[in-house]
Amino acid sequence: MAIRKVGLTLLQGLGTIGAMRFEILGEISDIETFATGSGIREVARLRRLYGRGRWRKRKGIARVRLPNGSVHVAELHWYEAAGIGRKEFKLKHLL
Image (cartoon, rainbow, N blue to C red; front, side):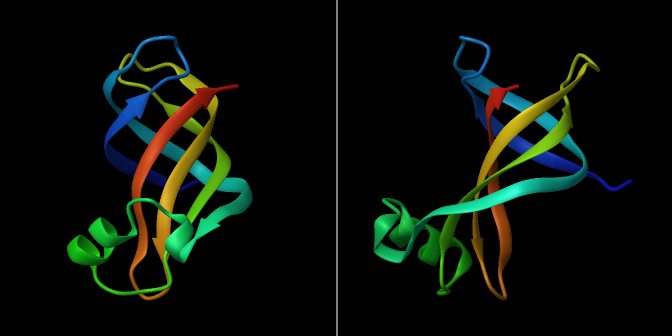
């Protein structure tokens, strides 16, 4: 089982908005692309920070560990480009 530490994210699933750290436990499943290229509002910022690429905004389901040690299944969103990788994970909803 792979464990990856992920930086700050916006947490909306608990009814509060704030920065929170979390770890992704295992693989991400049910991955879908829901925006590409100019359909991503922040594509200029992504290209400036990480480089040119075919940027996609994606979502999927994974088990996550929150700072208090609890483990939940959650919906995650992130940006991804070939040759650059997955960037800026956000925890959107606890399922």
